[in-house]
Each structure stands twice: as C-alpha cells, then as structure tokens.
Image 1 (cartoon, rainbow, N blue to C red):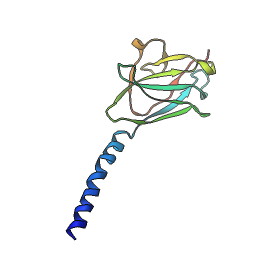
Image 2: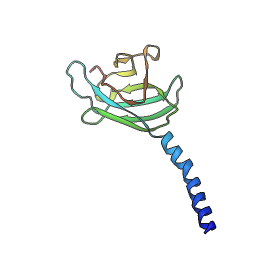
Image 3: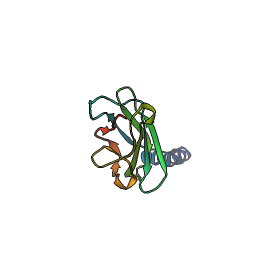
Image 4: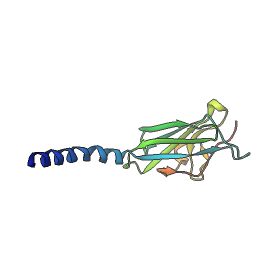
Length: 126
C-alpha cells in the first residue's frame, strides 16, 4: 500500500513541471487589420511580434479573410511586445505599429503592446 502511495506521489510531482511550462506558454496576441479609409478588413498581411527592444521573433501570423490574426504560444514573461506588420504582398503598407494602432515607418515611432486581444490595427492601401 505504501509503495502505491509513493508511486502516486512521484507521478504527481513529475506532472507539475509540464503543467507549469504549459502555463508559461499560454500567452497570445490577436487582433484585426483594417483599411482606415474604408473600414474593410485587410487579409493576407503578416503580423510579427518581437521581444521588446530585441530582434527576437516570438511568433507570426497572416490575417485571414476577416482581417483577423492570432499568434499563440507566447511566454508569460514577454509582457510587452514590439509589433511589425507587412502588407506589401497585398498592396498595403509595411512598418511598426504605433501608439494610435496605425503603421509607422520607423521603430523609433512605434509603441509596445501587451499580450492579449488588441483593437484593430490600421494599414493604408498603397
């Protein structure tokens, strides 16, 4: 009986690190891309998130037909993110996302964003 109890406790303690790692990687970044002139969704643009003040790419996604994107699996330690949008392939602007959720040409004019769901990002049609 004691042997079964010890085995049961060992199994429980082995599962804890896997659960903790899963919780650390449960973060996400999502939103929608829109054309501010028309309010229409921008599909096919790429959104990338980076660890703040580094070139470390944490994830990327393309916007779907409704302009929505979602990047899963972010580490909870990455509370603030730098965001870059590339709309060149679908004839929209490319750049960093600024504080007003519009695309800006330089990293210096960009803002950081928390994980989670964002209000729409605005991309100008070229």
